[in-house]
Amino acid sequence: MGRSGIAEFVLACVMPAERAVAVTGDFMEEASIRGSLWLWSSVVRTVLSRIAGDFLERPLTMIRVGGLGYLITLLFPLCVLGLLQIAVRWLSHSPGHSFGEPLTINTAPPSAPPKLYLAWPLQSIHFLWPVWFFLSGKWAARRAQGREAASALAVAGFGWLGILVYLAVLWRNGLTPDLTIYLQSVWHDVVLMAGALWARYRDVRQTWRAARG
Image 1 (cartoon, rainbow, N blue to C red):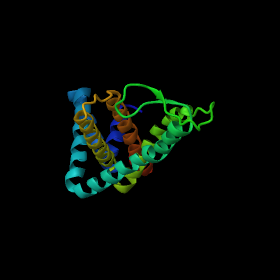
Image 2 (cartoon, helix red, strand yellow):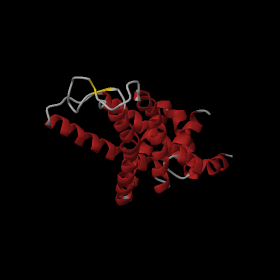
Image 3 (cartoon, rainbow, N blue to C red):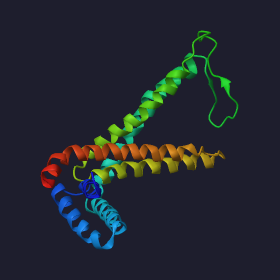
């Protein structure tokens, strides 16, 4: 796939496939004079303009999809990780600490079996995070067809709002947040967007190929 194919695919993520082919053709013709930098800057400007238009044209839809999508992303940590964390902390011998407490202690009650350690399920299940966010991105895309990229950004926006609230609580209690939370959030947003764009690609690939042919 050359640069024209890449540009077509990127534009097809935010506009009808037939329109993406036509716009790319215009861009490629102009890029033969102005160069590659102009081409990719035009693609980026077009994508950002289309996404901004999605928010402006359907603000309530974006708020609804973003809010519900954010709640869905919380289901995994609240349900699966939360229950597993309770099992690890109270049913087995595993090091842990209280909120804001720097000391690490054994959190198991005296009744816990002496050789029962459940820390490994808690660590291994974190590998399911990318899968969950990818599926959440697909869910958001299905709820806003034709506005898949905007829907993923709406979910990510609510996520960052939740992070800001969490950081405010930490700072209010005189605690220093872990900087890895920012890197994890960016990584989750990338996977979320990948899920939305994959759903978009599956919807338009036949039309896109037919328009190219």
